Length: 407
Ligand code: NAD
Image (cartoon, rainbow, N blue to C red; front, side, top):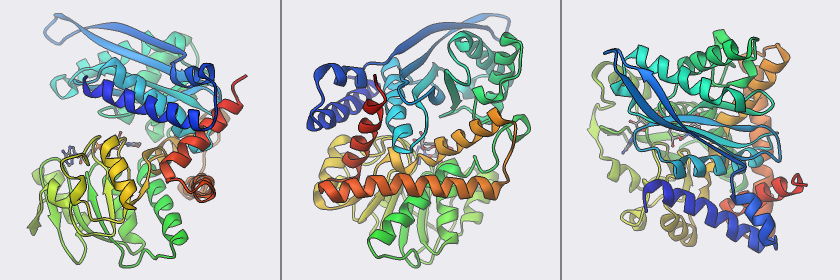
């Protein structure tokens, strides 16, 4: 079984188990599991050398009960159909958890973007947009960036799409540059949303942010902003890491210095180095895996000491590690809630694009807070009422919302 098949299986298993506990019948479970559409295609572009090259791609539209499909496009050499389907499935759940009027979708191309020139990358992005042009739209399917896709790539895709349909439609893509109708606050949104959820959880547990120690794995868009915003409200971020290196500082990592080092020297390192394994196993209050999937697994789960885990990456805990740690009493904020701030501000971008009226950064951040707080409360209440972990509560609430809209 490849990694994509594993994530798909675990997404489908949790939906099935939750739905069965809720007493849903087999046909309804199938409607929750099977994607409504799976578009698979070959994209041919001309390389700089003049030769033609073919790339495999997908756009999978999982469920549209609550609204247009919503989800990112991933450019990765290891992407497979099952992974795209799994991520589309989890987007249906995430959008429902966040209370957004969206279903779930996802796209992907099998490519190592670092090996393409900028021109090749643009041609590939435009080819993808033209392939999916007839199945997307602001009220049909709204793509966004994901792993290795950027606001600039969204601007190429939107431009290509608008040329094909012959009119402007900025709300069809989110995660665009602000100059093309993107939203202020989108860059920090995933980290900021995760922080709002963590603060809500601490307040339920009668704990404070001041002095609470945090370790953050991954220093990209999500990890960096989570760490930075958390330290601004009093958390002590004692360790951070990226794929190459890590830093530990018991008094709190100098995040600006780490970022400067990463930009200038390609490594976050300064002072006391820490490996990724050591970071995960630190004796901290809160562990924040914000890098990739499956980082906490059967090899390290018994060594995890944190009392709270915030799943900022998608699927950072394997199913086995999740079950082990949940049983041990670790409070785990599931990815479908913890990292929903990104899609929530994508929704705010979509609303602004449809209305042609744009909010200040403060207005966007305030709206994000209101929406994340509301999402957390519903999941927390379900978890307390049914005495179930937050992840199970999140899937229950999402499935309830989706099925109540399935006629
Ligand atoms: P990114 O590419 O900006 O950053 C990823 C970071 O992880 C980098 O610092 C990289 O060095 C680090 N990393 C990679 N391999 C690692 C390893 N083995 N050990 C430690 N660090 C490693 O990506 P991102 O946008 O920050 O996304 C991170 C995760 O969050 C992904 O799972 C993504 O799907 C998820 N996510 C992102 C958003 C968003 O808005 N960006 C929204 C929801 C979920």
